[in-house]
Image (cartoon, rainbow, N blue to C red; front, side, top):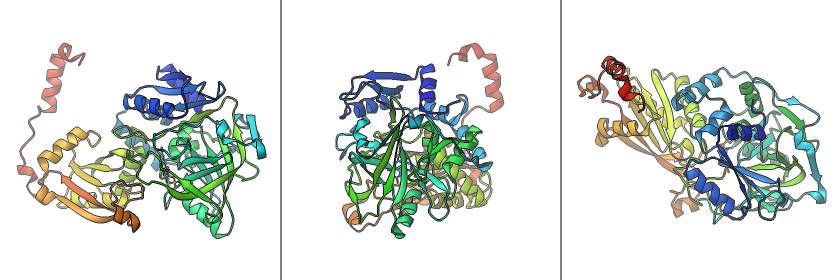
Length: 479
Ligand SMILES: Cc1cc2nc3c(=O)[nH]c(=O)nc-3n(C[C@H](O)[C@H](O)[C@H](O)COP(=O)(O)O)c2cc1C
């Protein structure tokens, strides 16, 4: 059972998927090694003896850029296909029974508790990840914990965090994100927002923190449900927030209203592969207590230019939600949903068995409306027939190339919400804060009204294939 980051690193090591690097520099070297390794789909990395830092103060990266990391974190068996993982997560999600966290008095996170003048966030060997980053980003694999002041429930969200000084952190949470809504509620009451930022933890907690769970659903309860036991937490007395008892590093403090304090945040090498959102004033957190384990490990998940996937190789956080929303809206005979492209959110593919005229178009347009929650989200929505595996982009492209006449089966609809991180916002739109984009709907299903006359595919039938494979099994055994 993986209960913290250290168990997770052990599990990677057992599978020969972890390397230790000694002597790297926090200033661009760790970030570039991570980039080169992620591009090569190489092992997870633990950096120790970082230049200027004592042995034991470590940084772990490249843990989730490869499938094995995500499979371990979520408990997906290796033999499950990616589409089956999406379907499995959808099943689990639909049966969700909250399992509350369990409060404990003590835990490894309390091995070091620093307050007042003893707080110096630079003690943590935080990399400058990308050449033009505006500073050192401690929060890339972060979970930011906040409590709704009206409803009392506790949220996790991953929002990037830049060090401003020894005790001050700036964090960028987009409009509409749960922490954005919560902090604005505190500020409207004239109060600072209590915040706990956790910079190294069980990767399942991190993964859930990046998922758009609905408003009111605490990620702690979801993590407890997946693990079959409540997550152990200790309460930070000053903020009252529950923090994972086995976390590596947690900064607890308060975020004052921006008119009291906000700082320049960015530029940052973002997940679409650009420094698109530049520099802006963003809210800060003043650290009141810094907790860390002995020999703490900072968990880094910095963006790497696509096609490296900075989110997760299997798009359970987008495809599952889209699939569920379509079914809730009454859409029948969906065979599979998958989302490709940077952030697993730009090219949505829905495979369906067409039942009636307009079925594919209805599903495509609904998908365009439902798939949201990030820059250039769902820019392309593609519907394909049931014989196409939506997780296989080559098959999807084959369908687009051979079953879609662009004159009649591609629609471009302007005016959907995107975000300031969208690199395609031209300077005029950016100045006007017109964060909108068009979406492209591609219907690559055989045209419904003549689908029975559509030429058959030239693949051998299933029985013939099976018979030939059985008879010639020696020929195929190693391929
Ligand atoms: C590695 C990574 C970094 C992210 N960074 C940010 C960020 O800086 N700001 C942001 O608003 N969302 C960011 N996201 C997306 C949010 O974590 C995601 O939308 C999540 O659902 C937010 O939680 P919430 O729904 O509780 O607001 C990031 C996601 C990942 C995987």
